[in-house]
Image (cartoon, rainbow, N blue to C red; front, side):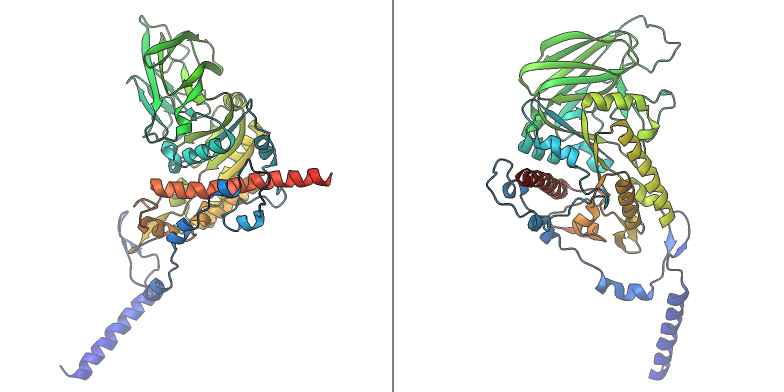
Length: 486
């Protein structure tokens, strides 16, 4: 074959490929539910060189130790807050309310040896196992005081970071999210949006069985948990729908500390045991003809700050208004909830296909914030938006197409409700940062391109903690200046 014929052939092939590249659908041609046929576009030919890269080493190395820069007990240290704020991803306030957290920070700045402050951290699987919450709790308790984990599920749902849990095999869990049991008609799921029972669900036709049933729950110090979490003096059991008196025994190191009865009644009841000395393990034994709905168990001290970890796997955060509101109000009131941290959005990302769907999700989420605000008018709100999340697009992992739309709508909903937003996506580095976090050495995120590794969890948790403490410090500095001016 002559050289010119080869040249003609090459030119024709290039021409045909160019035409195909021009007309082939950018989103490919779907073959079935699993396969999509793609053809390279002009953008693909050159995009690799222009793709933004995230320097994770810089993100990690530029982390600051805010407690050393802004010590709580050093009133003589000069603090350049504006300079420090440049070093963090800041909390974002509503334009019409730049002091939306002042009510909470006022309580925090006046915490004493007799006061408790409670933060309830709700989220999706990103916080399962006490991830993120454990770091935040440990740092806050180290700064402001407090011992104990706070609320935890009666039965371990997943591997727990802060406490080791075991239980008898006859417990059943009923949730107000995910696959819900239609038999729970009253929707009384409690503050953890789930409850546990050691007996079958009952109804109006319930009759006392011939024999009593027994069950137990065990909580002990975790070898990998933070020290503050591992000891406590107060044990609380939150329960309701108790048809018959139920015997409860509290044991530590196989020694019975107290034996009592759980009260009958449909409403919220709280059993409390107080020890004169710190404990690091507890076993709860139950015996009765029926089981109450156990909404949660809490481990605390007489004072300090508490951060509850409430992970709702698969939830988009739009669950609060679908549960029994009266029970939630009673629960929040007894717990003394001062601040809600809501960390949601990630579970909706794969299913939101356009801006309109993102707006609808934002509206649903706003309604949840409004619901909680009505339930606890004096509480403040911080919404932590979703992290970057990557999906396989052609031969590379890239940020989900509508993630930024979702973040924008979540931020709007948060500010509309009078809450404060923290942008985890921005803190990570923005678009396509998840891929960089996955490939970092050591890895900061897992190969599912969604969840953080333990190391990545500590990095992102520290970012939020730094921003939080700076805002608390800003409040105290403002109040100092106001006092001086007076």
